Length: 146
Image (cartoon, rainbow, N blue to C red; front, side):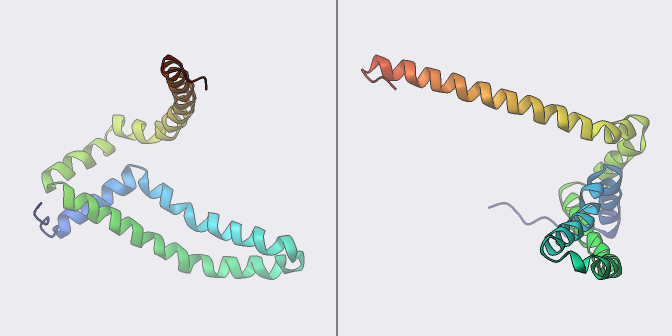
């Protein structure tokens, strides 16, 4: 069995947190609270439009409380990095994200992910079509038309 990783140091966790923020990962967490609040507002006001005014006040009032929870998931992500990388490796990774190339990587990452997502959809569709054609071909050799 694999050994349990040593407890990361405070320096490793701090570097992990730097990476989570600098890599753009934290942006993914930051949008969760506003999205959930918007969903709640939409759900409640569809059937009760009279609630809009008071609901908007309540949502603004409670938002800071839930924004604080974002720090929890950032800490968990930081700890995960800290457990898997040495302090020196974390410094190197953090350095990359502080570099011009790292900043460009973070800036273009959403665009690249979108391109990959679109390409993957086309790839999956073609793969599925090609697989089915081959299955039909091989089944036909066995006397089955499908």
